[in-house]
Length: 352
Image (cartoon, rainbow, N blue to C red):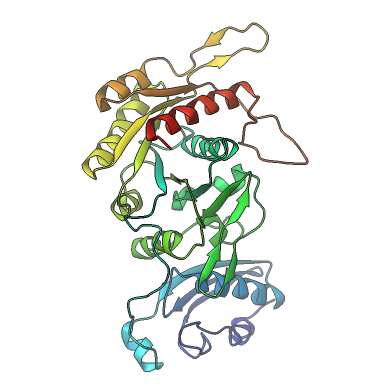
């Protein structure tokens, strides 16, 4: 069975990328827990939420598994200013480099997809709008900003991870869409237990340290509700359009109105409402069944003084074993055609 000493000895090989010293020497190994060869670590670095952290994370997982661990859970913390100074580290300086994706003169159109509550299909809508825009010839990226409920990589059937060169992260590309997600930064679908400020840093680096290239649209799959992460994204963006997703159920529409109100208060423009799971169409009879009721989307549209962009029925994409993506609809699928109509309206309304 693995011992704490064996783990600590393995971690001697891991350097803090800013201090250029072993994380054991810097006091960065805050916690080691071992349960039946499943190892849980808490690691502190001089800087967190960076491309280098992602490389450190991958190296730690590899080296600890080589030492005999079956799985590795990681949490990150930041060394105190005093600890950094004691290790000979320099104080933070303003970074210079390429223009930020968030600069006002960047021509990319930000489209945030939001909802009042989880489980309404917001991420499915985000993924299919992104892929539909790409099929229309647009240069598209998607940020899975639903930090605690990341699902975009799985929905798109992505198994690769971003590459890191120096201080730059290169996103994974699938179906013509460049993708970055918190899901790439955790091991074996582990829960995210980072503190709020660290999540804010990671989101900021999704914008500033990822090499997006030239984009026409950047889709943001926001966490549901109006919590800290959603507010961080709202305040980071100089300008943003928003799509509000709801189901026909009255409660879903009621809480979605809060997310819409948040967009308005942060001077973002609401493009429209998408009513997901609007109905179920029987393949045998063609009869429509309104499983979650009717009217929620219309009430939300009226309350937010916007327009209905589309009603999407309950359904599932055709599963292709060779090109597996459990939530992406083909253009000729009946639901895929609805998404095509929605993206056509988006492009027409934005004028791009």
